[in-house]
Each structure stands twice: as C-alpha cells, then as structure tokens.
Length: 127
Image (cartoon, rainbow, N blue to C red; front, side, top):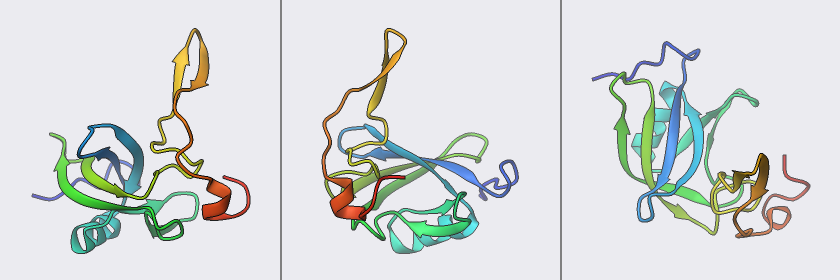
C-alpha cells in the first residue's frame, strides 16, 4: 500500500503522539523522502515548508522522536506516529508539547509549564 502524497504538494500531515500518555506532541509534514528516512532510521524526519528541506526532529536540540508505531488514515494521506520523546520537550518554545495553549473564555492561555529553556537549547530567540 502506498501513501497518497498528491494532495498537499507532495506532503502528508504527520500527527505525533506520545505513545505512553496519548498526548499529541506536534504536527509536522512529510514528503516521500522524509517518510522513507523515518522508517529507515526509526526517528521522525519531516519536510520543513519554510526552509524547503528535510530535517530530523532533534537535530539541533537532541530532543529526538523515537518512532514506535506508524498508522495511516483511510485515505492514506495523513499519518499518526506514536513515539517516545527523547528529551524534556518537543516544542521549540520550550514546552513538552507544541499544544500548550488552550482557548478559555475567548482567549488563548498557556496551560503548561515550560519543560526547558529554548534559548539554552537553540540559542537566540524562538522562531
């Protein structure tokens, strides 16, 4: 069975979920090469739309995503990766998950504590 990379300019969304807790950690995009590398290495690799290149999660922070299971949806155009997150957090802003804001009474509020200092990990200011 082949994945359908034809709908989003050669990309498929990849939902990244912590295998132990079930929490969604992030969403990225994969092209065929990123998917192939993910399968071959066992670590999540994505295609950066802003930089127009492949990147392995954790290549600069060391906070890699060890893939434990890969599933696809019924249309074969979206992936779910269950992972072990190797490091204190996944988000480039220093949180365990990129989903650290919650809509409450019409306002986006931070609902988690920072897990690490992004300046110490990445240098400079977060994107």
